[in-house]
Length: 112
Image 1: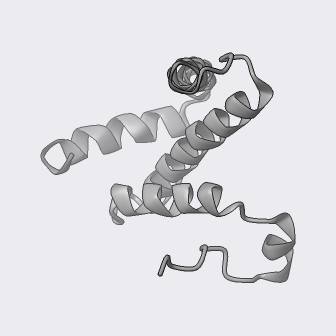
Image 2: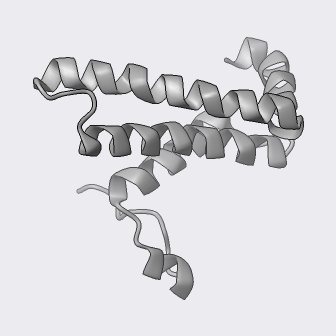
């Protein structure tokens, strides 16, 4: 990633800032959800159309999209991998909306 950082940043910025590309990005998110759902379904023996699988996979895809948007918003100055980890930790930790309203720390506690 580091050797292609400038190219990845430029492409990400275009997708975030250009409305037509943002719309196309949503289509790609749906494709990614379907792909990931099929993979998880194959490993678990569940149907890829199961509600729970679709919700979890779209949560992960959405977290990736928001991490990318945050990276672009900060002009690529932060480590994208670190932002992705934060986003996935929030999904994994089951962050509650009441925590957002109260301003509580949103990161799940570290594993012991």
